[in-house]
Length: 101
Image (cartoon, rainbow, N blue to C red; front, side, top):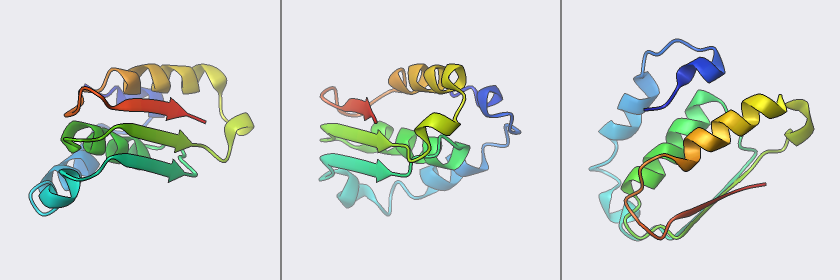
């Protein structure tokens, strides 16, 4: 379970529900997705939920790279906690690796 308290946001879960509602429509895409690179990953709830969705549904996903353009402007302790939680997200592919840049 994602800890939204790290983001100081309400736990409405609307973004989670949106992505889950797209799972069927994106099924073919998700069954072929091997590499994901998200430039400008801002560690906001929307970005995290997208990454979580792709990890949970990407059956053949091998690599996910999350690049933040604001590396030095973020709180490093908060950043490490978010990374730690994201590394624990369930994955549809046992081969999926996550890299942070």
